[in-house]
Length: 234
Image 1: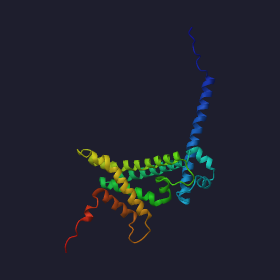
Image 2: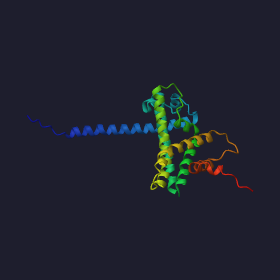
Image 3: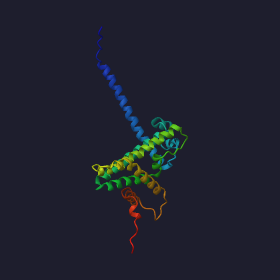
Image 4: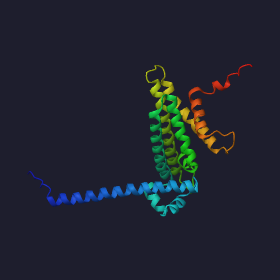
């Protein structure tokens, strides 16, 4: 026996539309609230330090720790969320600078400069999004999640470094090793040199941000071979 389904009534459609509308508004509210919490967390970390606990961050944001756990799961989730915002801002700065770059070298300089500017603007936020710094007891799984989230941050920066080199070497045969291995090695140099520069006390010998960015860019492009050359004999 064939049973024909009754077509949905106008009343059913109205109810379904109302439910969908409420769900959409609720999702929009959650996304807006999440953005507000990320902004508040970034401000709190900037003021309190990279090891601020979830409770400290929540208090500075004027809410409870349970709210942050509800939106981000744990501290590793919050680190990842803040890191994604910082990374997005870096990408925008790099893209804007790259548009005016006249060469791959200038493109690299734009990336290094944006990286150092981000780190120098707020060392506490930089540390918060680039390394696991527990401010409260965390589970083993929490530590693994944090390591994965922060690893993604530097993987993304490695991809940014690779872009100008790919553009230059796209048509050059036999350069696959450069594209495959060099970006990860480069981000190690940028990160370690940048963090050492950031931690160094201010002195006449410490280069400014622009000079340090130029120096790191030269190391990426030319190594230290030019500095190892014997000085000319008078």
